[in-house]
Length: 398
Image (cartoon, rainbow, N blue to C red; front, side, top):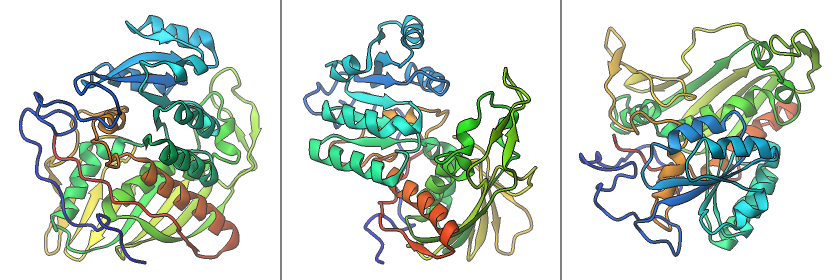
């Protein structure tokens, strides 16, 4: 399978000059958003659907970013939306249909449960809105494909978390690879080990039913990072197991209650990248602890420790061939001091006709990789990955 243009592991853009904004444009330059019909100087209007726990992180970020403005929120629990609106000046609490029809809303930020992602996204797309979703893009690749097809037909854009890969941690690691400091990349490992979220989550049921589990919960951070670092994946093979048939809730009003487990809770897999690199993943809700790095990348001339992909920053460490110590590298790429919502702002500032860095095609590819790993675990066979994506544009230090 040939590597699509831009999917290789070399090449980067120059550093953003001093005085540039989040998109890399000079601060005094007119915005060039991909939202048709808008004044280039007008902030992009954001409407949030879903005001649950994750919304707090987005709300804190959106208020700090130029170029975007929160204008409306909606939730099935109207009181929850009202509470958010009252806490933010100029924000209205609306029913979902009214938010989707509102002319002030340019991008719908979807923070619902994953099972509702596709339904809400399709409604927003039908209303002519760009959409940005919390991970994953949808519950299944079939639903995700319908979202991308509808967006292409309507001429709107789709973005999707995780945007942690746009921070200085993953982006500095990417630049280190692109600059050739480890030579040709050969392999990578990705490791996430925890005894399970029921120890701290008061309602952990959804982690242990289809659509949950360690891979679909945490895998988007790791697979998106591996694609960002090494390019798209062409095939996978996986294996999985389940240690417990029930889990004990450890906190909250349901503490001590047993809940059933209907999925595998330890997943391992091998990802073959179009570049020739091979990545190994272990995602587990069954392990107690680990000293393994979250991600390591190994090349002909060096090895790289990559920070936690669930965070926007962290130390990147390099061990050179013939060296004696791990070097902690200075930040050299990525959005500094970033947080959830930077991917949305990046999409809003992406020129029309260009794929956002945290774009729909990348999110679909990541979802297919994870879905295929789980299918392979059931069959024991290698599964080709049908989709591909461009390796996202690097983020200069900004």
